Length: 286
Image 1 (cartoon, one colour):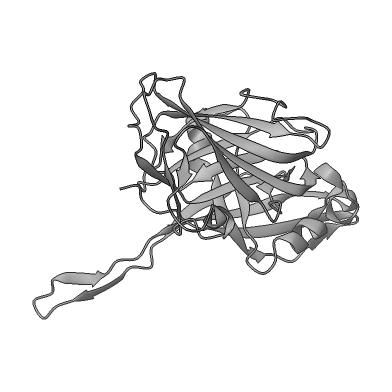
Image 2 (cartoon, rainbow, N blue to C red):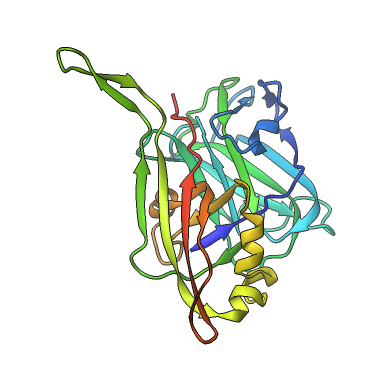
């Protein structure tokens, strides 16, 4: 399981492109408030549109981090919209690192929300900025109208750790909608947004990965635990290697760890642990 944690903060947002503008008054602040249904709204580019027209959302921060998982959720851009990434390292003059190499098209999920998740190569250089380059390329057609508006619910960029888990992990859904029946036994109720859940048992491992800095970036179970406390946002991807791009989009969860189970001594210097993770869902695209 890939767990991305500790998004850089604060992130300052700016836009590049003729006519690109913030419509909501948050200046992009909602992109990192941990509530993807609380969106930032943008105005698309002005003028003649082609597949070469690119709206750039740029985020910058102070302390460099090595990115592994990057994404946008709660999008209202059309499914199939092409998004590429570019990064800036501390010594770079501009956003030239991996420029336009990672690419992904916006995917509509079964719940009606839209996302674009990227899993990058492990061990990348630390960076101090990211550009989400959104092209007016919707499966090869320039379908986004000039001066139109679109929403982004949450923007993610962060380091990650790859934590092996046992087979038998499970994904479920929690639907908090309350249902009642009338005197004629007809159903009525108060609809609420459902969210996905993930239950995982981590693979038995040695003390190095538990408390010895044996994971990526010198992390271990205990240090990751500390960064996921108190409802801190994370991204959890139970399967991320050797799968299709569509499956990755379906299974990546912007989430919180609702239960970090006790570290269990299995035998000698071997340990196990259970995790329960719950999605923070984005709004359905209208």
